[in-house]
Amino acid sequence: MPCARALATAQPADLPADMPAGLPARRRGGPALVGPLLAGLLGLGLLGGCGMGPPPSGQEAADLIGAPPAPSPRARALAGYYQRLQRHLLAQGLLRRDGGGPDTGFRSLDLARNFTAIAFYDEHSGGELSQSRAEVSRFHPWRGPVRIAGYFGPSVSAAQRSQDSETLRSYASRLARITAQPITTDAANPNFHVLFMGADDNDALRETVRKVWPDFPASRLDRLTQLPRDIYCLVHTNTPSAAWGRERAIALIRAEHPDLMRLSCIHEELAQGLGLSNDSPFARPSIFNDDEEFATLTSHDELLLKMLYDPRLKSGMSLEAAQPIIRQIAQELAGEIGS
Picture 1: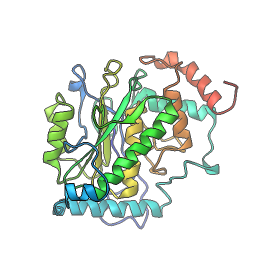
Picture 2: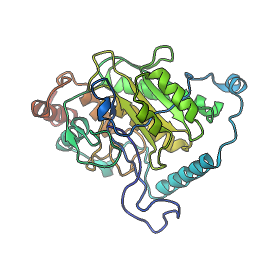
Picture 3: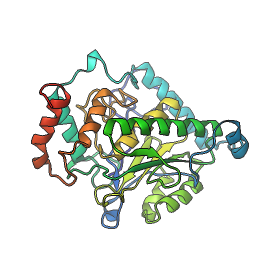
Picture 4: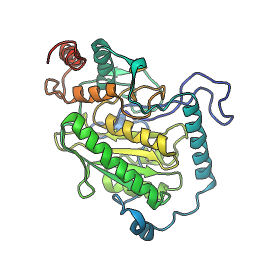
């Protein structure tokens, strides 16, 4: 169940001429199922990376890495497109970073409904990135320690690598505080690989995927080098089938993204990789929504993550069994009843 980002519907008059019809927004899916029993279910997935861990920072990194090669015409076109897209979204009042405010209130019923839709349904359960009917699944959070590392293609500059690595460290710490789970950055023994790759990095992408996930299906890997531009970022995990401590994930963040879209992809893909794998048009304020209103994790999303790791919800639990527990937890978190 791929987890990607792309385009929605409304068409403002000032939409840039090279933008697809419809107001740009995220296309996402849940984390893709990759494992011995599930590889055959996959359709399209996104990964990438160069075989390197987080780089040094500052002048040392610049001296070691050197300047990236000149971008190809395709890479330049993509970078220009995403810059214009970001400006357009910001002009529409989207890509908010305020976490929600007085205009985005929600109740426990909203929280319970949104958690059910996001944690128990797979929009892309067959593996395809195209929109399809969501199917109910069993509860499958990432249960073991999460060890995150960044990987960078040759097109990514030393300064950008340093910035992205710091973003990963900061966000991993935030996720750990919210969930009370062991979520860290760990270049020595990672199991959540975040790959910053561009259109010119296909050789590095293939090499890295083979290193960090040797049994990743070759046909899926081939598709990663031919992604349409409306796929912004994506995560694959094996959490539905993995034993405790055997979880793995690979996320792709397009190297051509400007800073805010890049940050938004990091926030979304890492949180979805933990088990919040679907989207809901009713989730607000939330990054788990295709409308691009919010770029970064919101107060509502933090509560979803707390619910994901509430010990009363057990991995493998059916929706029927979980529903009364979900309602109880949502009421507690919303302050409607005592915990």
